[in-house]
Image (cartoon, rainbow, N blue to C red; front, side, top):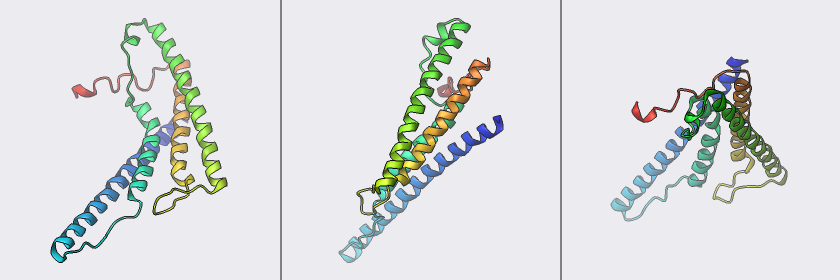
Amino acid sequence: MRRALDNLYRISGGLAAAFIVAIVAVVFVQVCLNLADKIAAAMFGTGLGLTIPSYADFTGFFLAASTFLALAYALRAGGHIRVTLLLTRLPEQARRGVEIVVVAIALAMSAYASWYIILLVYESLEYGDRSSGMVSVPLWLPQLPVAFGLIILTIALLDELVGLLRGRPASWDGKGENLLSE
């Protein structure tokens, strides 16, 4: 089970990275098209009018997908910002209790958000909602990776809570605290 969960988090992180690469590719191609347009305008007096239709919409969709798909991976890797000023001053037993309470609250919030994004995806699919850009995209398509990201985050938080309740240290312990000194 541990290997399957870790693979799920890695796959989610890999998909997030792939969406970042997609953003870079779309923006790079659009910049090249803009450059070709400027060169054509300088040489022939008129531009070619080359553009990727709705490229800003697509990069926004890709950014949302990347952000939400990366949440579980970042949690396990210690990449989330944690304010530990108070936590580090507590005795070990109290620190563990606070970690459990905080993870339980985060789990409840993530489960709530997951439930409502699933309902939003279903509603968008049911009503046929579409984006308003030049390329009209069914909204459930960009909403789906957001839903998957939140569901995977909920699974990761549940995994974390079970681990903490069983006495294991948090997956992020010792990770991320010294990122600036590396």
